[in-house]
Length: 257
Image (cartoon, rainbow, N blue to C red; front, side, top):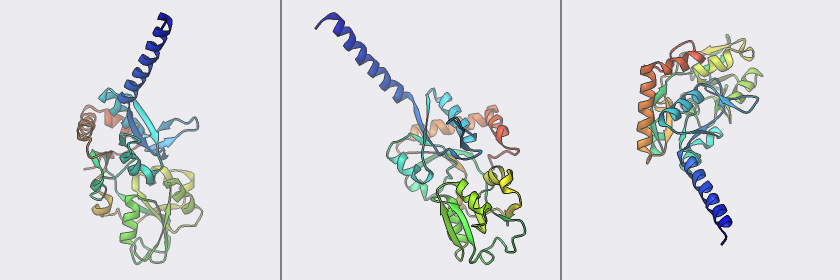
């Protein structure tokens, strides 16, 4: 073999090796991109939002490149278990049911779920008031769990994305919808499409379905990654970084008690 060919071969091998190291060093983060202001896909294809900012800061403090991987919501946990990515940040609530399959970091925010309907709809946000009514929820969420549990006489209509829920609520195809109260406030009630709509009833008190806040999801065997990210969340709270991200998107502290 000529020296020239040997140099080319060694260079190629080295390039593949470096590419493998770079990939190994990247933290692959599963994101939805369809849940503003937490996660949103811009016209240029970039991902923005509170979840995205938090993810990038966590990657930075871990000393790893952040590789954002888009995934539809109802495939998030299966994709994590299949190792399509290393962690999920998608406003995923920490529930005992989900913890049977995966693990979570410490919470990075906690806001309650609430119903949204037309102002003065003529019915109450109770099981009796919603009997026979159509309630829209995003599929495979804590809100589907709560809606099916708390409003057994209602017709629960499932959607792939939260935006689709809002679209059908605004068009009159739904009587009400159930989702995170802050996301509803920022993503629907605070925009033109949500004019004439309001929260219906009180915040839900349903810890079995709603959990104890949203966290990064990881595979059960990745306890070292889980603990490192949990500590970073606490550090961000302590050093003011979290507040800067919070205030960029919200008027109140969404961390919760």
